[in-house]
Length: 317
Length: 295
Image (cartoon, rainbow over all chains, first blue to last red; front, side):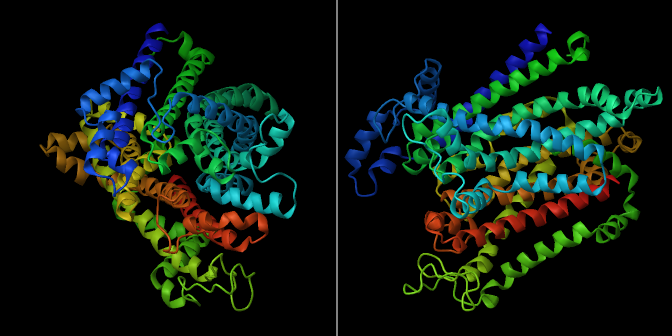
């Protein structure tokens, strides 16, 4: 168990390092000359060179990468080009907002997705299964802004049930905030529903076809008991892992939803940084998403191991 | 992304059952499925629009009529006009071209590279397999849209950038599916006999294994096509994809959703429905192919 955890942690660190290289490459190598990008085409070469020197982007790449990474390890995410102030407070504030929105979507979609997947699996091959599967797959691949537009038109503009903007303003009560977050949560719920239902369906079908399920049925247990005690306990385990891997996606999907609903979360922050060519902010935001994802999958793997007696007690891994 | 896991092994196993000489059978089964027919009709409709859009569009999709802005759907303009008086129907029809072209080319690129990589990972294994496995993990840690976004910002938006980028992001993901299909194949007798006959690795990979993992690749291709539509439309919506004034569904929604609260719903809803129908069409076809191959 301890060796497994260490191994798992080591792999996560390697992945994190690779991620930092990808992000650094995209943010610091590809744009070419940040000084030119910020000052525009009309700036004199001297001014561009001075700014490049101030930003430290005229140093060798390895030196830049090293100072960027060591800064990150000390909690220093660098200076924002657009605000000329440290990036870190912006990221923290945005994360809090995003967690509210993502949390709401999660609380709704997890039970819903599992229920949908299990119902589909119990009726495998029948009409209801095909409907849930195709709807789920379509919901998962329908861009958030498309479903977002549809819910804005129906519930915001036509029925006036919910406010169209996600931000409730400063000092709003939690209930008002919730009211503002319902519409933006719907596109996220739709996308996640497809993933979770698909995984729950696959897990349940596998459990249904297993020998222990057949034995339980043959020894005379009623179908509800077989489903509850034998099928669900086994099929929901892999679903936990999937739910965790979707947190990375979820935070990423926030970009579109937050832009569409004008909500100041991590997604909107990245979007604004991208438009302003504020690479330190962009890199920090994207890396934050990656780290959150890695932590979530790590927790999921550990949970999965702890919950599964076969892995906890067995000698494999 | 998730579909790769559960879909991989069973499909690969089925590949063995369908010997190459009976390869026509799945096509007949597909044509008998109503969901496949429905999906194919939707896709063919958009392909038709992409090919002949300019000829069948009732108006010039670029022509602005500043005296007829935000006109509600009517006989003259079935889908109404947008903020600067362009015909929404014409823009929806002509807008099919770029998104179809970009998503298809990107998915083809990813599938070709991913297949080669996956064959090598599955058959050659070893260090190669471990390294690529880590890269896949790192790529998976970010949503496709975010990676694409990061690089498009750095490189500047152009259709070619998007095609290459999405193709490269898909490569390790497709490679993973192909790899697991190859691993199932490598247990089988025909490979050991090929090895005993003294065949070289490239021959075994591309002549012996490849035809047997084609069903898995086909399913992966259609699944990825759906995600490509998602990614390209989203990039366009965020302003990092196809640039205005070129007619494009995502970009047109971005340009017009600001007037939604004023009640001008038609300039955003119709492009949104176009994207939705394309996604549903791809998924109906994907689902049917998966059903046929696993039945």
